[in-house]
Length: 342
Image (cartoon, rainbow, N blue to C red; front, side, top):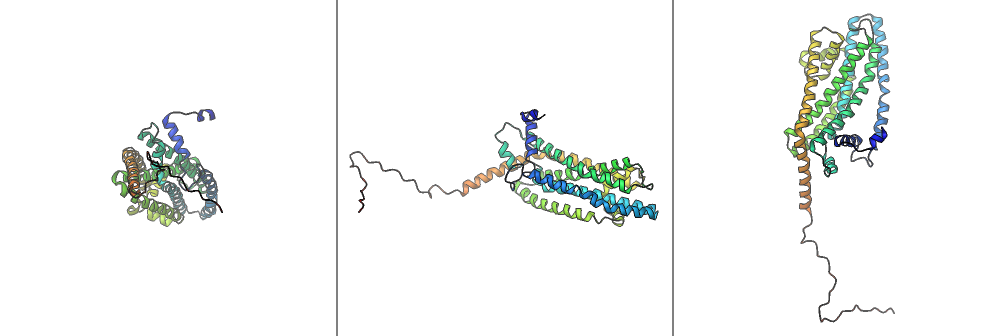
């Protein structure tokens, strides 16, 4: 396998390997690949926090079991499921917003790949596949721990579906679907901006929008810890549920568990429709915008070269270099005076 990877393969494979290797590199990093150990260390530090966060829930449900109130138990389970779904969706949205500039090929990619016999659609397809290959394991791992731990903690004879495996699968599918919705939604948003806005306006709006998205996802992560049964009941009101995507995927989970509530079935249908629309819209905008995106960066590169030429020092201002003295025909040869030391 190692020998096969060392060989050169088709352009799409080599582009994909190039984008995967340099995805987390930036201008702030001095050496290529230096960011990878930092990300691995950060990720390994964040994973053990799931058991720490879920540990208080064990005491909470142990107390609810002693109370013997089924309605109170179901309300608590629904609130905690909404909290975990919102937390994971916000984390994926934050990662996508932080790497906002890496969703599409940038000017550095065009400069490094311009001399190769490649087409623009090959570069864009490789970038999209690299983005998808990086996002997929992160989404699965972030959803794996709460999907396994929470059903084990909250299991009871009062559950909608007492099967542990069914509850794990339902929570896993709902969390992954919600995470992909945020991921593809942000990709589609940037693609729409590339199609609708001009180059200067896009550069201005994109930077501010990235800051707003990062701040919004951080706020949503913090606010997710305050989701209680009262907040869940308020979010399920018809006036609010249509504007809250995590509630849609809560309905998807409840419907997969067998909840016959018509509201949950409606929310599940809305969640699947929204996920399908975000996927199709991101693919469509990615295909349509690659021509526009290429023109934006190549146009910016040409304008930068024009500005450099415009700001260059004019030729009449630079003095001509001195030429060595050439004696004319018949002219006596000039000699340098000899300075005698005293």
